[in-house]
Length: 263
Picture 1: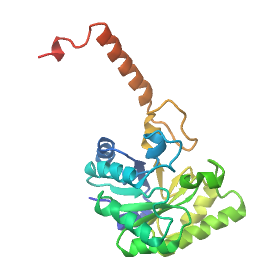
Picture 2 (picture 1 turned 180 degrees about the vertical axis):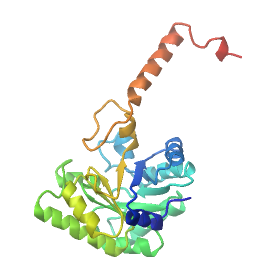
Picture 3 (picture 1 turned 90 degrees about the vertical axis):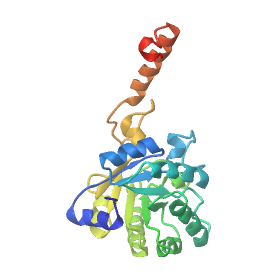
Picture 4 (picture 1 turned 30 degrees about the vertical axis):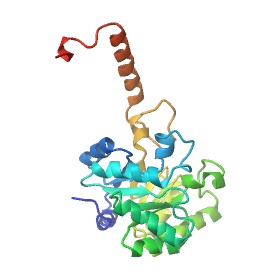
């Protein structure tokens, strides 16, 4: 059964934790879907995870649509949420609606995610058109230059109040869910208790209604370190290096292909 906005709100009410992971391609999305993850996020993190960008800012609409289409081909049950990339929704509400609609109509996503305390008219316009919107507060990667780098948000009382006020405003505007990134656990707890919509944390402590991580982080798919808030459940980078090294060695040594691999 497909994960729905109604089902997510029911999960919060029942105290059932929500799971969300990223995917950027069909095979990964199919794997996550078969294992029962609730939400698959086609994150603009594709920029620094797969495309070689320093951060998410250069990611384009066309790149996001390309990866969202691939993910949707592999999903039957999970809700697919597509990140709206930098400057795809900030110019005016009409631009925001047009770009959001492309993720639903062209790519097949079920919802879009928008970062920051943005123009609420744009959020309302998208929702009024029948497109579910997920909010994202705390540390917002698209604003990394404005925020002064990757740092925890909401430590100071005025920062915490601003995040709480923005969370309430987004809920009032109609978002079905909120991501909180890199904020103190105590602030997450307050927001979870304040809102009736689910709150999904990433580096936001254990009290959120659900958790999201980058799949490549939890699988250990690269040799660099992972964020403090992530947990590496496997080390596929090392296993991949070993497999490729053995292939090279066996081909050069005449051991592959063997008779069993030949016709």
